[in-house]
Image (cartoon, rainbow, N blue to C red):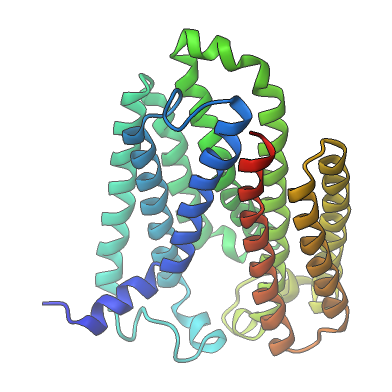
Length: 319
């Protein structure tokens, strides 16, 4: 029988706050951006509530599996990078973690098959199978390859913003009358969704590069060939700064676009995001030690949260 401490460890293992953020992101994308941009009431067309539940269940289960397999592979490096915080091998056995990985991943794939069946296209489930496979390969191989692992995480993170629109479009394509009625709004919806996909990709990439600098000691000791280990912390920091400046340029352009489109609420909110990114850039220039990079990693996560919150403004801007 699992006691309360064991349940708490299981929730910590699957990073439950991150799962809640992913869930909220998907809901805000649909109800605050996609539906208003298309002029649709909730569940008027596109995804039904059952399909939405299955989509979210699949994404969350596969994500949980990704977290578990990553912790399994990182037992040694986490003992140095996160001493006392690594659960697998301490409070959760490796065999238990292995079982949990397969349960969560296979249940996520099963949910995706049912979801795809309801959309009349079983082949859609290959997207989820590919994501689960990519998470496994990331933990086993890509994680310790310079830049490759960072890019994989950034791509998968941006999927949280893009999948809801992708499958809403697929669902609408099966609904001839509704598809024709909203077709004129597709261009605007595509632009707005792609902005957030790009935002998620760049900010996640920046955070991953910063985390590699933070985890340099453990990665170097156990032969994980991350960017700072292979090319040095100086080169890794330059690439992180380049990513940050590229993100800043993109955010300034996006904010200008929002002002042009008269989305004043979200444009004003993006000014806060830009200010926080400038702060991150200033502190990244000065960062030299592990605590500096740990603080920057937390700030970059807050930057992502501010971006997610900005979706709420579209509910009022697009009405």
